[in-house]
Image (tube, rainbow, N blue to C red; front, side, top):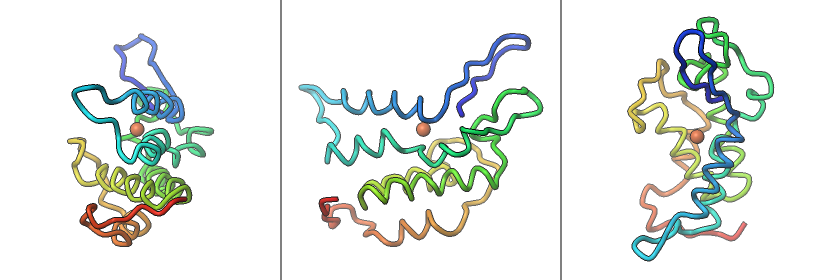
Length: 149
Ligand SMILES: [Fe+2]
């Protein structure tokens, strides 16, 4: 869930990650014009944009409530065991579609725990699936060959 902060007594705007990624996918499909290129490879990049938070689906069906706000936790305050599951689930979902989608999704999850988004997360980088996915693929993307799904 994404729960916006709000002044005391004001309503919070809350949306599921599926709603968030649907909007992201619309933006990715529209990205590009005569001054800059669209995403490439288009189908794989748009797929990962549309599904980059799919690991949240089970959690969003029954989200925890932040006792301080009494609305669903914002991502950065989601209890660590739940957050680790969601951030591992997204690369698994995307890798099942295409290895390149799995790689991009792994990089996204890895970045959450390594300051890529300038967001201070209160947890250490979780070992396991996300790190393993990054090691499975060449670090130099120029050498990576796309294999049709
Ligand atoms: Fe997202």
